Picture 1 (tube, one colour):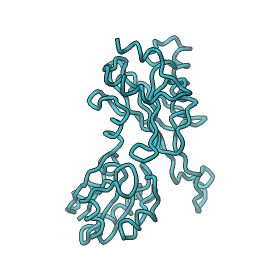
Picture 2: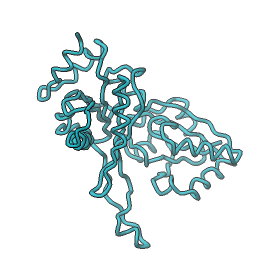
Picture 3: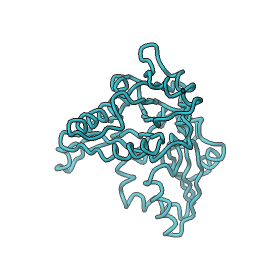
Length: 288
């Protein structure tokens, strides 16, 4: 059996009772460490589970041979594939399920909390969210802005937008791609400030080309960090103010709320205005 087990968003104790019981009985255990991270390391998980864990990094997850090996092993043994958040929150894991079933390997999924539902902690109602948007890191030569169009589509339908921010883990350097020995760049995790800065850059470009603006520097934004952890942080302010916010260590997420908020959503958001950064007056006006 191949088990895909969600670990939740916080630390080792966020695994479900069902998930923990399965982990303890499995022959092989992999921790997917490519699409997200936990607030604790491999050693803490191994101590809590009482089992050794193999890290499934980017190279393993993207390798057809490695994934085939995991599936082949699961044909005769119990294999646990641990995923931060919910197991089916990323297409990578959906692909693993389909591959296993194509080869006649039984699959069982143990769900858990993910940012897709835990984002409700900021007070914006979950049923009012539109399409989830991923914001990638820009480079000097690659600055896509298609995610902005999806965000605008949500705003035009008066829906909130959850923006998932890019992470770079075990990314090979350009020079090493030409060598036999791989060298890797330091891990990078996009912050809400970096995401807001990229959005503002797109806004400025569209203003300069005389395009109508739905999202502006003064639009309301909500920054979230380490959701589900004891040191979780949330702040609500304008997009311009968000570009200078420091919410500390990863992981961060950014929410762009709909234009028209329910009074309960406004009351909930008010508690996240810090002494240094005040909520925009436009938020107060939406309650009327």
